[in-house]
Image (cartoon, rainbow, N blue to C red; front, side):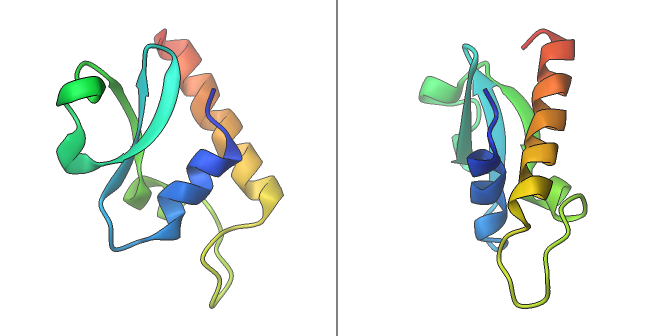
Length: 86
């Protein structure tokens, strides 16, 4: 299940190239270089931090959006994964 914590983690460090990936029904936030290796091999890439930066309003000087915005983004990502059969 994709949660607001996953979204928050993706947005926490804009300089790190993080992606949200679903492997065997579980969501993980990992550095892009780890995709396709080890435990993340064959995972479904859902979104990157860059993908989310435009979707979640981040107040000036803040590192994360409001809880409601993060929950809405997480729910939208979860719905998309379910639609794709991930």
